[in-house]
Length: 121
Image (cartoon, rainbow, N blue to C red; front, side, top):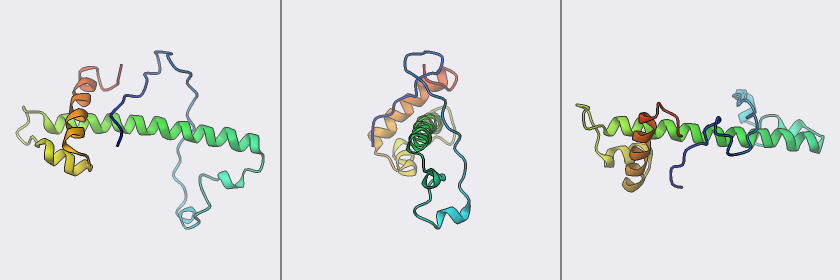
């Protein structure tokens, strides 16, 4: 598993940012067809296929970064020593299927995010 990294803040302008494609749930019958993936298989024009698949790849990256930020904040809250129901790092790591060292890093990252209002700087 990679080290926790924050998604770049949209207002910094430090990276070229494309508008992520909306991630929509696929219909249940689409899951039965292993060739079906967000209707990309039906796009015949290679230019359009490249554009749409690039949008999806970006959307998944943004969603992954954002989900990781929420994981970190939750881990920090669960490890907060002021909570009466505080969890030890080993239990947080087990729940999230992380190593204990990675859980420690995520807790630190989450504490930083919580200090900055829930978004990385």
